[in-house]
Each structure stands twice: as C-alpha cells, then as structure tokens.
Image (tube, rainbow over all chains, first blue to last red; front, top):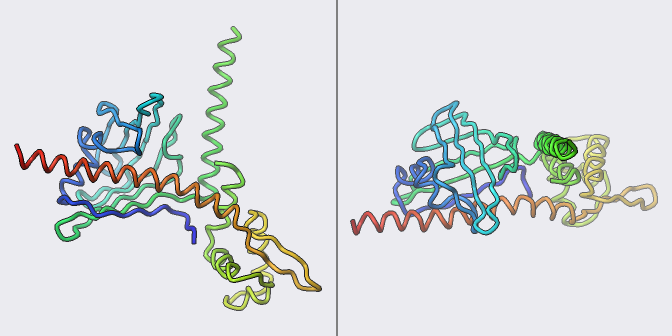
Length: 149
Length: 111
C-alpha cells in the first residue's frame, strides 16, 4: 500500500566510514550523486555536517545543462551514522521543498547498509509547492515588466 | 505536482483510509461492512469515505438503501508513479555510488 514516504535501502561493499565520506565530502559526492544523465559539479557542493549546517549541491543535466539545486538544512547529524534535514525552497529545486531527508548508515557484516527516507507527500507539501509556483510567477512578472520597459 | 495528486496524498496519509482501500481491493462493500474491522461508528467511516471519494480513490453507488464503495485504481497509480520518480532517482544514484565506491577501493589497492 502506498505510504507517505519513499524508503530506499541498499548494502554497499565498503566500510561505513568511507560510505559516509562519499555522502559528505565534495569530491567524493560529485563522483556519484544524481540519476543517470546528471552530474554534480564539485564546486557546487557546499556541505557543513552539523546540526544547523547544510548539505547543498547542484545537479546539472549532461545534455541540456539544466541545473537542479538541492538545498538541505541539517537538523540532526551523528557522524558516521545518520543525518536528517529539511529540503529548502530554491528555484528549479530537484527535491520539492517541505520534504525531509533522513539517511542512516549501518554496519552490515563487511558491508554498509544505507537506508533513506524521504517525504512526506502531504497537504503541507502541496502548500509549499504552491508557494514555489507563486515565486516562479513573481519572477515571470518581473521579467515581463523588464521586457516592457 | 497537481492539486488532484496532493488531495490523493492527503487522503492516503490516514491509516484508517489506507485500510479501507485495502479492504476494497477484495471487492465492493457498504458502510456497515467497512466499519466492521474498526472500533469506529458508521458516521466516522462515512467521513473517511467522503475524503476518499473527494480524492477520486473510490466511487460510491446506491443499491436499494445501501451505498457501496468501489476502489478506483487510477489516482492511486498516479500517486505511486509520482513517488516512483523519487525511487528511480535514488536507485540510479545508488547504482552510481556502488561503482564509485568500487572504483575508489580498486584505486586504493593498486596505488
């Protein structure tokens, strides 16, 4: 049955400390993050792993060059086990704002199990999405106004 | 995300409503039948049915004096598909992480 959160889990063939570094160090994160066809420019990564810190990066489409930022305000960080944060609003954001991202790292024999929760897909989320649209319309209005001058 | 879709997610956010949908996968049912497994009055169940109907997740027909609820799969599929785009995002990222880790460890071994 459909739930309000997306849950993903996978075991990686590497020690936990290293997997954590691949999520939290710019040069290592830029080696893998994003779906097929997207890359993360290493200089777009801005990470500060502490509560009140941030987990920010841009994804760039390999073909069209379209840029999708991810801006995360970190609420909880327990290195190298767990981080949890809010998706912030930004234009063309890859993840819709109002959702939370929770990533856990567990020892799994010689491997490391990463478990990720993202959501919720709820009415609050809709309201924020509407806000995002309103921001886009404001930008459009401003652009039209400039054209008219 | 469309407004219809967020109505669907709002409707799905409640465990009773998810249980009702699950029950309806077994076939149409009236309010009395749907209320049976819950410690809830029929009016309380009716309220949940109204929300589900508003989200297009069920339709209701009248047979004599009883109203039967029927599961509508379309919006549920759309909601699932929307979440699928996020799952695909992470699946493909995880594939890339898997090979990036393997490359890194291989480089370390041969260095």
